[in-house]
Amino acid sequence: QVQLVESGGGLVQPGGSLRLSCAASGRIIRINTMGWYRQAPGEERKLVATITSSRNTNYSDSVKGRFTISRDNAKNTVYLQMNSLKPEDTAVYYCNFGQLGFTYWGQGTQVTVSS
Image 1 (tube, rainbow, N blue to C red):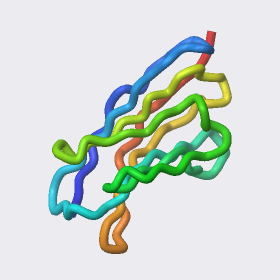
Image 2 (image 1 turned 45 degrees about the vertical axis):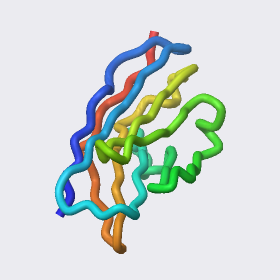
Image 3 (image 1 turned 60 degrees about the vertical axis):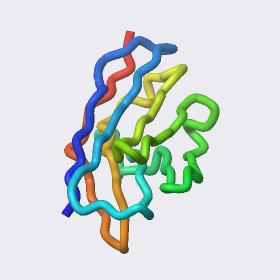
């Protein structure tokens, strides 16, 4: 079992920045993938970015060039630096952790981009 604790959401004006963090704990093996998904009201949950334990990254087209995913393997923590935020980035952001065919989700953190 793996537990995920997210932090860093909040309210920010358009053009602003936020940094999300997600710390994983529990039965963690060295090879895994961590990532972020988001869900806006009335929409399905969608990929934002993922990063493997060897630091290969993948981004959705909507956030490329604005968001950066990174991780600290020693701390089992993944980060999402979000710059140039837009109102359409407003959503609940969920941390995701995958290993050995199992997937785990965080509780979600609200990001609201509004003036």
